[in-house]
Length: 98
Image (cartoon, rainbow, N blue to C red):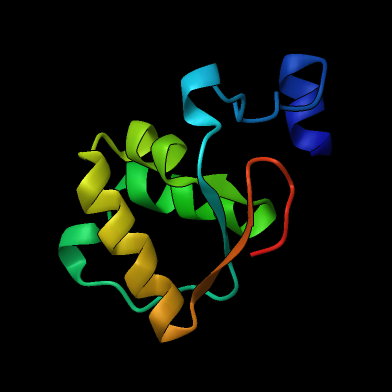
């Protein structure tokens, strides 16, 4: 970060991880380890969303919004990550354990 401070006078801004109200319902998913993805999924949007998931749990709606996928496709993708052990459902949006 010192190089960024030298060029910009401050640290780089944190990525925008705010959730819109409609994106807070449902179970949340946390990345446990980086999945082995096909080349077609190695996009900036998917990798960026997975990076956020490695730091904190996110909802399927948040993920779908980030990667610009339909919600059903996102839920299927996240469920497959859970089945493979790459991700897990941690809690619903009310912070209750699942």
